[in-house]
Length: 390
Image (cartoon, rainbow, N blue to C red; front, side, top):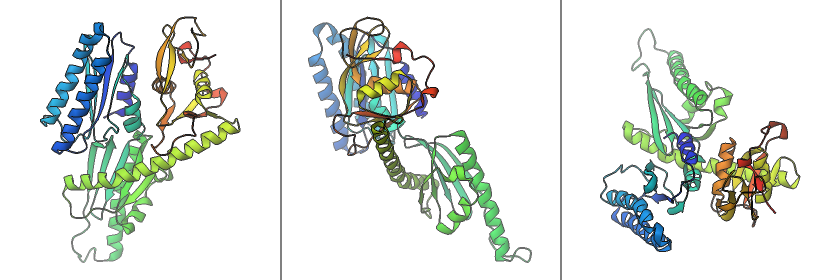
């Protein structure tokens, strides 16, 4: 899955006249108990949504939610990809929207949202905040390179050039054997270097025995070695499918820990810079002001932050309070924060980092950001990226 492309498509869906249902499911366990848990969650959420819907809209909402229930029923009968541990559904019957995204990254907690646009926060938290991963597994005779996004192997390549199986008069020395191994490792390094050049934000996990790993890394440029987030043992004696599964199982926690460490470092830097008023912002008001100026470089979101904001019905400007838009004077309508803020951050080419569940921002802060210099900001901030307040 091209996560960036999918996210852009979801963000590009315009405001609809009718509610869009966004459903995020955890299907990580394939047993009957878990499948029933998914069914019960969806049934309960659908019932609550219909009960809260005004009578004139109830039938349209029922039509919107019916495909969701139908898909979940098929999921229980195992009609779909069993390898998918996360399912995202987007439905709006009056506009003909129904889209399914399957990943190997489960959505936790499971959620159902109704809004006038697809809800993207769970997708950002689970998928878009996780960079692509390159896994290279090397032993003395072969190398496997996997390109992974959302826990799914998108591309797999295999390089094989066995070492001489027996000594001969012509190549009977350990020195020659070492030369052959070095040549093979150098050739195995080339695809990884090219993949890193093609996917600038990818992280790397290497799997090899230590003696081979050190020699292999000597053939990687520093810019590639800097992207290595973990080094794990090479699983010996496995078929290709079992090897791929074992490598994914080892790489996932290593990547999660690396991302956790990085997100906390960004949080601490943003708070420190905000205190020193040096290219940092903390708090919703400061972050929205920087967003309006086009200065957000990295947006840091507290996982527990949820708030009711305002959006101009005409120019789209965001506001924290007020009776009318400060830019065009039009009426303000309710907007979900941080949903709208995350959308604007992506539109401004900012990185969005959702903090771990147990490591948020200080109480009441909600949002923080690392900022670009004012000279890097857009020459003119459009009204749609603005912020209005009291």
